[in-house]
Picture 1 (cartoon, rainbow, N blue to C red):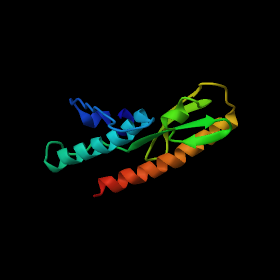
Picture 2: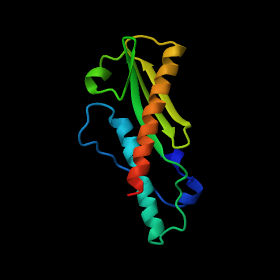
Picture 3: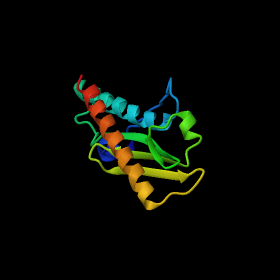
Picture 4: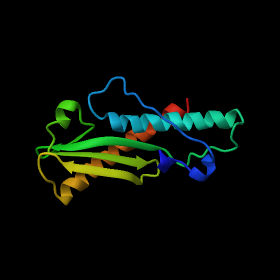
Length: 141
């Protein structure tokens, strides 16, 4: 969440976001990041509208996905049964400016080369672009 905020404008406030994923089959951390972003933007917009703060500290949105390799096949948004057997598991967090916040990949049951990493990162970026569009649509309602 820090990557989406201007912490100087946040001032002497504490932002506490608690995410409970009520139903999921894997990817709960990435779903929490994507959903929490919408909640944070909405909360600060509400504070501005009611006059509690002059300007929102939100600079950009963030979204996240998981990707992985099962055999030689790259997959987006792994469900639990895929995640536990994936050769490579990666989480990617990006901003609405299409810049990386986090790339965390692990060779769970094997190793991976640069081409595989580039392919997974590209797949993640495509998935994140879809999530960023969904966030924007949710926030304009």
